[in-house]
Figure 1: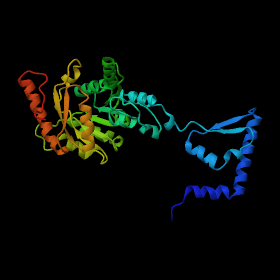
Figure 2: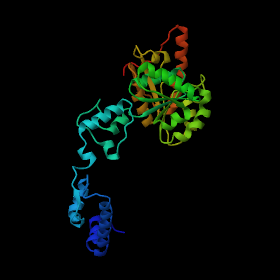
Figure 3: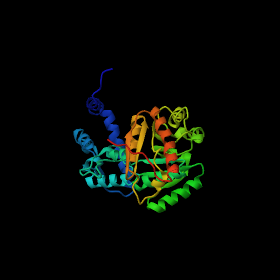
Amino acid sequence: MGSIDLKDAVDKVFKSNRELASKIIKIIGALWRNIKSAGVEELKIMNFCGTHEWTTTHYGLRALLPDGIDMVAGPGCPVCITPSFYVESAVKLALEGVRVYSYGDAYRLPAVKKVNDVKSLAEARSMGGRVIGLVGGTGNLGRGLALRLAKASQEVVIGSRYKEKAETIAKEVTEKICKKVQGLTNEDAARISDVIILTIPFEGIRNIIEKISQYLEGKTVISTIVPPIFSEKSAAEVVRELLPRTVYLASAFHNIGYKALLDLEKDVECDVAVCGDEPAKKIAIELAEKIPGVRAFDCGPIEYSRIIENFTHLLIYMNKRYRKKGVSLRFTGI
């Protein structure tokens, strides 16, 4: 079937079908009489889109309306007439972790001035205007990441098997940095989050992922899990086997000390090695580098995570051996 010109189709229906046009006019007239019977003497209808005004004028629709009804040309569609400072304010809110709702076109509408190098809500989401869920986030690493990411204006939720425990930790974080952090069950945290960070013990992988997997389709998952030393598979590879196929997976944050994260008075002197799928690695690197002092590097596919995870055991040993709290990893020459 060949393509149909919409204008020609409309012309055929309305310009050549007097009977249909007559029926429509009668219906409009009947509706207007009902409105007038309620005491309305004048009705103004404003269109807001240039296409609406063109259609109204081209087909002479104003001439068909009864006396008392006036169709007024509006200033343009919301996207066309939205002042730039509205967009800039919305972008600022999104980057601060406030959830902003908009129509599809306005989501991509660029502002005249950039806000922290971001011009639209679409860019704001890619730069951090999204929900970060910490599954198993009531432990030391989860608390530390929640503090640092929320302080960096990310919208953070903490998940736990027990909602009350998550709410307690979330309240502590909120009070410490004066930015709202929510406490939920692991399932609810995974459900509402765009990015899920697994801060759970190795032995809990299967049980927890089976409970949250239905909420992970199409999302990004970041594993911070460290397996027992010299395991046959990396924790990330075990996670990969349990995730839906549509999930993007990265492995990161293994070698970052929780005590350094919890000490907000100091920068974190640590580099973070990131392995995994390309889209997930990009997000993990962005999040890691929101923590002052941290650099993050692409360290290859998920299979390489085994090296990074096992290196964590060496760092733990060195902290104990030299009675230090923050022995960490730094890459030089890059």
